[in-house]
Every structure is written in C-alpha cells, then in structure tokens.
Image 1 (cartoon, helix red, strand yellow):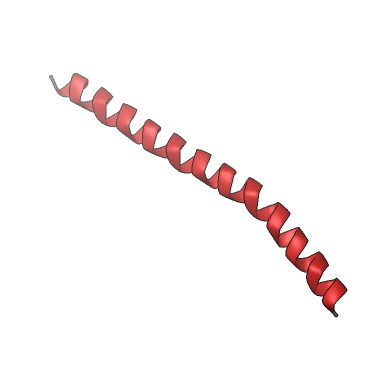
Image 2 (cartoon, one colour):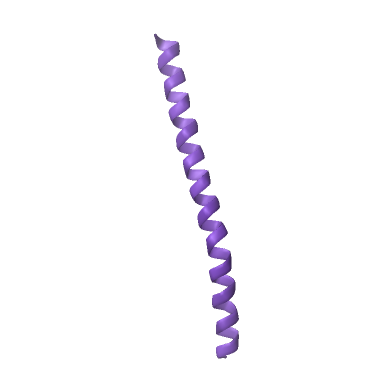
Length: 46
C-alpha cells in the first residue's frame, strides 16, 4: 500500500505544478484582458 500511496503522491505532485502554472497564467491573462477592455471603454466614452 505504501508503494501505491507513493505513486499517487508523485502523480499528484507532478500534476499540481503545471495546473498551478497554467491557472495562474489564465488568471493573469483574464485580468489583463479585463483591464485592457476597461481602458478601451474609457477611451471610447471620452
């Protein structure tokens, strides 16, 4: 059972890093797009 648990934890550990990196990139990209759309709306209003 310890070998199975070791394999599971290794899989979780190696799959967590790409998920964290990609989710962080997606959040930053969404915030940047939102900020750009807000600035574009302000320029159009003026």
